[in-house]
Amino acid sequence: MKIELIGVPLDLGASRRGVDMGPSAIRIAGITERLQRIGHEVIDAGDLEVVAPEVQTILDPKLKYLPEITKTLAHLAHDVGEALEREHFPLVLGGDHSIAMGSIGGVAAYLRKHNKKLGVMWIDAHGDMNTHETTLSGNIHGMPFAALLGKGASELVNIGGNFQKLQPRNAVLVGVRNLDPKEQHLIRESGITVYTMEDIDRRGIYEVIVEALEIATLHTDYLHISFDMDALDPQDAPGVGTAVRGGLTYREAHTAMEIIAGTRRVCSLEVVEVNPILDIRNTTAEVATELVESALGKRII
Image (cartoon, rainbow, N blue to C red; front, side, top):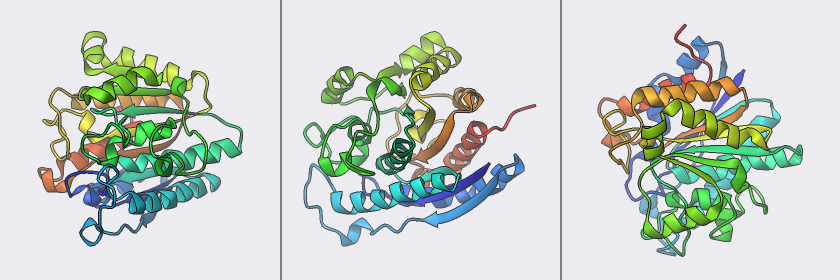
């Protein structure tokens, strides 16, 4: 298929600098060449333009850098929608996880226009379910999942259009192991399906991913995968801003991606939170690239 790379060098949603270099690191790891080797055509659309935080002012400490984030993500939503109109597969390279509001916003708007439904699998150590009312940090990368479900600041909720992008029954969170106290309540009340690392330890990655896919695709036509590299254990992916011990192993992550590829329902994918400043010899970008390969069809034999 024709894969369109869209880089989003955005780190305004995070508390640490560095993930703005994630798209470049993934490119340096050979994402284009690797995808071409497994038979895909790759079109690199380059990076969106983002204004650096050093020349901006925080207007609201509960929603840091809100104007620039919403501007950038509105642009991303448009570009993702245009890629889908061209029958390209949008592969979005982050950047912090706030970019999901733009990528999923664009996919949801496109599918809404064609009377199709979207399911989302969110693979992450964190819930990203805070709002401006519950956040402890004011960092918007902790809010995108809530916004996509229609909760939080209207500026975030309406990225991609004034409608709810995702229905709770079509949303699955996998690999979570670090939640804020108020966020725990929000997740319990949200109606989404959650698989913690404890679930994966007890049941195994195969059973969890198969069941998660059944839920995310039962009432939907297409599937978006939002993959935060901090879902992996820091031993395998050290270059992330919010590392949490006890995550997915390298092999578990590949197994998940291979099972996902087998559904043939994935219409878009994003990989976020690669931070080269904190990485070791571009290890995390290399792993991210390999996981994308697995999600898009690479097999051992």
